Length: 94
Image 1: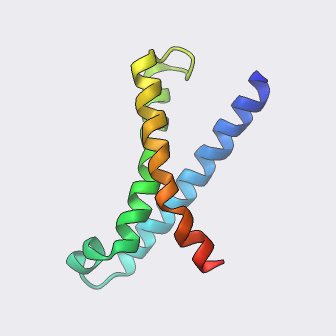
Image 2 (image 1 turned 90 degrees about the vertical axis):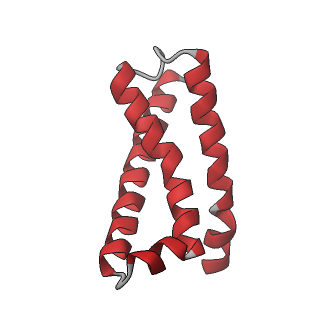
């Protein structure tokens, strides 16, 4: 079980980095920062990426997922629920 959890963490980390790069490239390609920030899809994508970035930051700060206290783990879990907002967009595009 522990091995699968580690593998899932790294898979999630890679996907988070890829989506972050994609969002950054879309920002670079946008002609106006205001237009980028007011686009609902960009906001949802940012909120979907945020939990993964926070988790990567927390793991790098604490050294491992195991050493995080219960409050930190609950915070990361709550942020993960924000990703559900991204699901309708993916399903609509697919």
